[in-house]
Image (cartoon, rainbow, N blue to C red):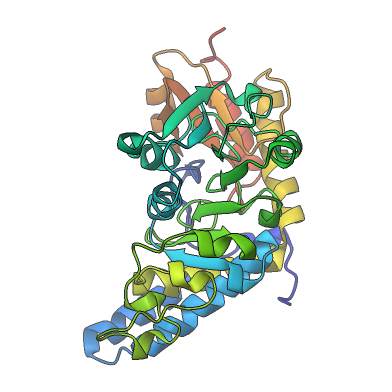
Length: 354
């Protein structure tokens, strides 16, 4: 297992200028990932690149991710984006299936199911707080984010797990906005997906899917290419079909340089540990909430109703944040400290609206 680092030790690897509170949009690379990527780019530039080395980085990332989400690496597929994996699951549904999702959830886990309407697949959208109570015997799949991208609300996973078990409903959980700060066991649900370029501090072009072993054969790997082979470098030409026996059959051809940077980032997160990352990130978010008169919450994402001058005030103060659904969104992660929370609170305290 990786050696343990304190949050303070890990923070030395970040070099943000100003106050960066936008990990929910794009995570910052630690120094070790930046250096690995620069080395790989130099090898590419000089003609010294070795694709097999990219495979080693990807393999390391797969194993780290598996440990982070509590799964065996054989249950983890890798690719470049969440929607591709959601699409495989959606296309494998029977005609007339019923899908349940949360109102306003991220469309990468919604559009793939809506695109199956020509087969009679229907999608019901309900408030996030009602999603567990809305699971019924006719519900084939629940597709929902563990943490909402727009505002940081958490789904009640215990209630969802109980409801799905009672009805035989399968759950596709998108953990893009939680894995990296919220401890979780992907094995609680049939499927999970996660993009790596936010809380996992990797470049765009890295994503993961987990599938419970007894459900894998029900998924048609219709996006399979050479990298889905049991031995990818021997399955680049010709028939017959020879896919990997495990979740690697869902692998998509890798964005090589992204994986070079992803592996060290995951190692760093493992070294700190998810409990420490959770306490740090949520603690900073609640420090900010308290300072501006908001109630504490259990999320590392803060969604604020602000007045018209808030965006300019944030920019003038050197704070990087995002606007989602007309509200200012701040996100706190490993790269942040108490000074960041206090600075943001000082700037925004007078810009909140009821």
